[in-house]
Image (cartoon, rainbow, N blue to C red; front, side, top):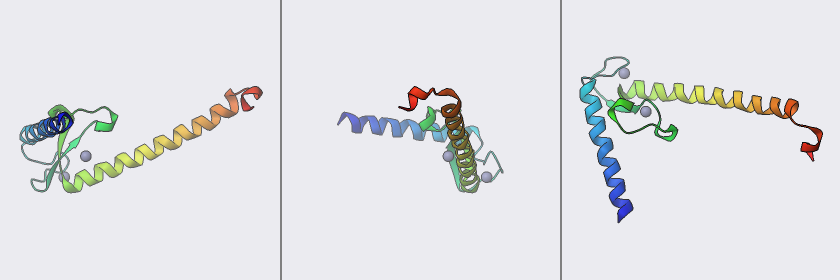
Length: 101
Ligand SMILES: [Zn+2]
Ligand SMILES: [Zn+2]
């Protein structure tokens, strides 16, 4: 019951913020200026601590929205590769013999 109410409250805030973002952006895509197939995009992803406030939302058309997520995935993949490489380097240079068991 409580969790359902919480879910509905969250959803409601999201819709209110989305409408506010659309109105602020003049119902136009912020990348290409298209006025149809509009969607709102989280500037900071929710999984990375972004909020459902209009300050964190931007209006994009479907095409630009798909594109921006593809770009994000690409930079995330590169970031992961860098992190993995750094981990290997740290293991080589940073660990003593005892640490290897
Ligand atoms: Zn998005
Ligand atoms: Zn667009």
